[in-house]
Amino acid sequence: MAGSALRKGYLVLYNAASAVAWAMILVRVASVYSANGAGAVPLVVDDFARVTQTFAVMEIFHALTGIVPAPLFTTLMQVASRLMLVWGISYPFPQLNMSTWYSSMLTAWSTTEVIRYTYFALKQFDFIPYFLHWLRYSAFLVLYPMGISSEVAMIIKALVGPADKLATWYPYALVAVLLSYIPGSVILYSHMLSQRRKQVGGAKGAAKKAKKSQ
Image (cartoon, rainbow, N blue to C red):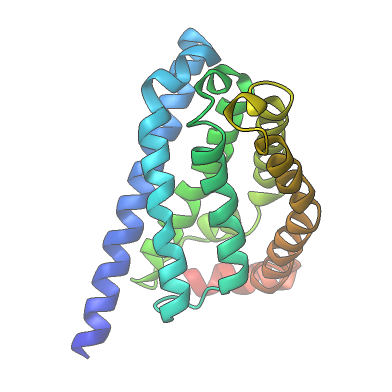
């Protein structure tokens, strides 16, 4: 009983803190981009976004230990790809962060994570409004293509730009990463579509979920 309460308290704290952190990133990107353009975005969000995303390695720990029933393989794929972007692209090549692709990437990530972490925080109290449930399993239809296209664009900009100045082997590594996006994106998107069919489904499934959340 005590262990269950401790686990619940930890998950509430972790998910709530993560939702707030990503909400801060989303607000900063939106406000700075609208006021000063893409070039000013990394000045106010780059370091914070990198730390916030790095903290997501806890997702792997959660999947490994069974704290949450998340599939380890897809969790590893998503966390690893984002860490590669924040540490392998935006950190060594900060000039690339001034592009619109960087802003759109963070917008897709942060919107996704605000929805996801808010969902999981409220799930600990068995209270999930249907609109949030629907967003959790539907928003990716727009946000995933937006995010992955931005990620690929950032990698390509590094590949055709400053990558060879970092190390002679780095362009080859980036090509390998780009090739991995072909099966990786299919696997992740298929997984999310499968989850959506289970959680939202058709009209009957939606009505059932709405009734359950009331």
